[in-house]
Amino acid sequence: MYISGWGNFPRIHSKVYRHWSINQVQSAISNSSEIIPTGLLRSYGDSALNSATLSALSLNKILNFDQSNKTITCESGVSFMELINFLSRYNLTLPVTPGTKFITIGGAIASDIHGKNHHRSGSFGSWVQSIRIISADGTIHNCSHTEEIDLFRATIGGMGLTGMILDATIRLVPLKSTSIEQITFRANDLKNLFDLFEQNKDAEYSVSWLDTNSTSDKFGRGVLFVGKEINENQELILSEPKLNIPFYFPNKTLNKLSVSLLNNLYYRVNNSGRKQVAFDEFFYPLDVLNNWNRGYGKNGFIQYQFVVPKEFSYQTITKVLKTMHQFGISSFLTVLKLMGKSNDFLLSFPMEGYTLAMDIPLSNATLELAKKIDEIIIDNGGRLYLTKDARMSEEMFWKTYTKIEDFIEIKSKYDPNNKFQSLQSKRLGVGV
Image 1 (cartoon, rainbow, N blue to C red):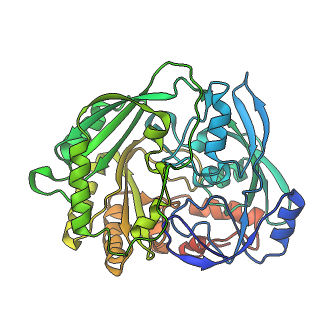
Image 2 (cartoon, rainbow, N blue to C red):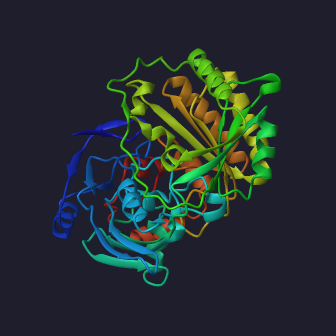
Image 3 (cartoon, rainbow, N blue to C red):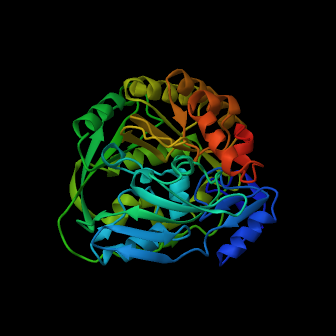
């Protein structure tokens, strides 16, 4: 069947293995010369794509729930939506969640996802207690902070390249609220936006939208959303999308003019103020619209997400926005977040600083723009998020991720024939 990541680029034909038992997983791995695990295919580029893929969606059971110790063990194909709804009955929840609830536990671990609270709670991998994984020879490994530590450090953030995650045990946190007190700050320009982030650096949650089109005294204007949990006890039920985009928009629907109009509208409707919003609305605003990625057309889009150290963040983002202006290319879905300290996982993305994510319709000009921005990110000590990447060069990857050789050494130990591969890993030269 044809599959793609969320950006619809690239799109390839793949033999998809679906399984209902460990024996079937082992058989699929044994019968493939190369393979990569997949979940709900919400990574944007080619990190979960190959000629053979191993779907985790049938591994969808909760295996053990320890309410008193606040841990849960579940199979890798369980979605965040399913898990959060289950846990809310016991006033518990996941400590870290990204911008969509339609991802799997296995995908969250492989991507070492982060959320609006990374500056306080770190990445998802920091809350993983243990993992059970099938390696290339069919062996089942139990890895954790104390057992097969090398495999544990390589698997979290390892993009599925160390083996197939069967299940994992996750530490949980109390669910204080099913609503969030949201404070909105409208920033006049980029400097004002950075100042607001620093003034609210101790907030439980923070995230901002940024206008990539604005110039002159409005350059880099944006809207910062700060969230605080409200103490209340109501059952949390996350919902399916209420609306659907049934077809692909024409490829040039999101052009500089239409994005400029949307940016102006979004900035104007988000006035500074305070209000109470639902859990779903605060954490997953785009989930209300099913297949929203079709709005970028059949050609698809790239999400360019980078992080740079804090001391270089303002100057780097300024250079990135000015480069976009030079190319005449805009992004409507542009998200800026504050990030906390990095962790010890070998291919994990976060570092202390700021991360900017931009969704840009695919074109030859977009790919040329991305190359120019690459140079800025490299010069300022940053890196790109593998989960969002669809086109980074091997040279950039090896310059910006400093623990690749350690990762490859561990991968070769558990996968000496390099069976677990993706289009991305081939492009980036992650071989053994």
